[in-house]
Image (tube, rainbow, N blue to C red; front, top):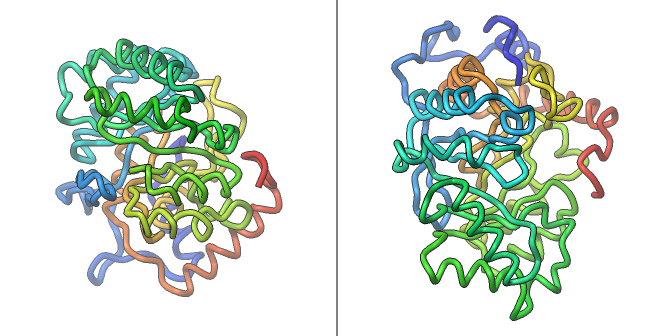
Length: 323
C-alpha cells in the first residue's frame, strides 16, 4: 500500500462513486479526525474488542525490512489505531516472527498476535506452533490459524491425529487461546471447516474486486456469522501487484482506491477487522484516517464501486488461485 498521492485523490475517487464523503455538513479535511479514535469491534465469539484495522507482517518480513522498521510500523499502529491491535504473522514471512518479538516483550497487552501453521498432522502442528512461540518470544499466541486451507487435505485435518487435534491439544495446554482458518481460494474449504463449529476465527479475502470472482462475502462470511466466528478480512487492497519481495512493492488496487476499499471491507456484515500490509508509519496513518472516516456507502456509491470492481475482476482473473 504505497500512499504517495494527496488526500484530495481519495475524495475525488469517492466523488466519482456518487458524491464526496462528508462529516456533518462539510467535506473531510486532512486533519479532521486526528482526535477521533479508530472504531473497535468485537472479534466474534472471542469477545475481544479490537480496532477495525490490523497489521499483516508479510510485506515487511518477506521484503526484508529491518527489525526497527517493522517494529516502528507496529508501534505506529498501536498508537494510531488503538489496542489490542491484531498483528498477523507466520513462520515464512522472512524473519517477521523474530523481529516483532522485542515489541511483544514490551507491549504484549497491546498486541493480539496471530500466527499460522499449514502442517496437517497433530505432532507436526504442535512442533510448528511451539517453534513460532519461541521465535515470537511469548508463552502463548492469541490465535493460530490453519493457513490457506484450500490447499489442505480436509479429511486429514479432522482425523484424531490431524491438524485440528494438534490445535486443540495446544489450547488445552494454554499455548494458544483461539483457533481459526485462513485462505484466499476454494471457498468450499471454508464452508466445510467453519460449518463444524470448531473454529473461532476466519481470515478470508474481502475486497470489492475479488467479490466478483471468489465472493467470500456471500459464500463464506454468512457461515462465519452463524457460528459467531470472528472475521479478519485480508487482501483488502487486492494483495501485491508483483510479489512481496521488493521494498517498493505496491498493492493491486490504485492508491486512490485505498479509502473506498477499506470502507467497502468494513461495510461487509460480519467483518471485525481489516488486515493491511502497511510498510511505513505514513501508510499506517493514512489507513487510520480512512477508518476514522468510515461510513456505509450510499446505494449510488455502492453501485459505482461494484461496477468498477467487475471491470477490474476481468483484468485480475483468478489471481489468488482456484475458485
